Amino acid sequence: MTQPIIQVEHATVRRQGKAILDDVSFSVHGNEHVAIIGPNGAGKSTLMQVISEEIHPLYSPKTRRILFGREKWEVLRLRQHMGIVSQNLQYLCNSSYKSWEIAMSGFFSSIGLDFHHQVTEEHRTKVEEIMRRFGVWHLKDKQMNRLSSGEARRVLLCRASIHDPEVMLLDEAVSNLDFPSRREYRQTLQQLDQEGKTIILATHELSEIIPAINRIVVMQGGRIVADGPKQEILNESLLSLVYGTQVYIDEREGLYSAWC
Image (cartoon, rainbow, N blue to C red):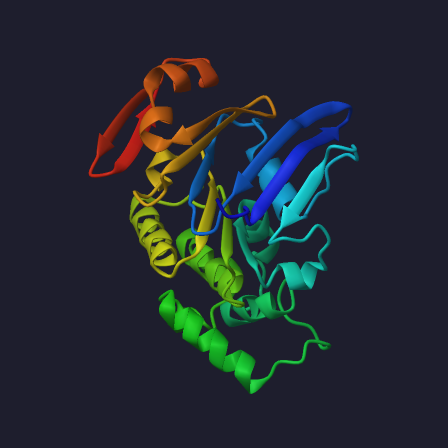
C-alpha cells in the first residue's frame, strides 16, 4: 500500500491541564474521503487543527506529524497542498472585505488584502475562474458580512481552493446553514470529489456525509473510538453509546440522518 499523505502519530493536546486530544494516531491516503464525527468536545476540531498545523501537539519521542511526505513545512507552502474551511475561519472573515478579496487572500494565507499584497493579473484571472466554478462570481463585490451563511461558505471554499490543493479540510462546515444551503454544500463536496480532491470532514451532521465518503472516524473524549467503513460504523448501538443517549439513524439514497 502507498504511504499516507496525512499521518499523525501519538498526538496529545492539553488545555488547562486537560487532554483534549489524547494520544491520537490518524492517517489518510490520497483520494480517500473521511468523515470525523462525535459529540461536542470529542476532539474533532482539535485533530483538524493538528493536521493543518494551526496547533501543535505536545512533544513526545513517539509523536510525529508527516504531511505529504514531510515533517516540516512553512505555512504558506503547506496551504498550497491543503485547503481549509471552518467555523472559526468564517468568523474571522466576517468583515467588510469584499468576497473577491477574501477569495484572493488565499494566495497569501491572510484574511483579506493589505497594501503589501501584490495582486497580479494572473491572480485575478484565477479568482474569477474559481468563483465562477463555485457559483459566487455574482457576489464578488458584496461584503462578507452581508452574505448569507451559505454564500460565505462557498466564498471560503473558493479561498481554500485557490492553489488547487490535494486535500480539503472541512470543519463543521454546514453549521448554521438552512436546508437549501446544505444541499448546495453537498453538491460542492461532490464537485470536489469529482475533481480528485481528498476530503477530510469533521461534522456532527450525518446529512453532510456525501455517498463518496466511505470511511467514518468516531471520536469521544479526545480519542478515536471507532474507525471503519460507513456501513459498519453508522449504526444506532455504537452512536448511542458514544453520544450517551438513544440515537436513531435513517438512510435514503446514500445519505444518512440521525436524531434522538
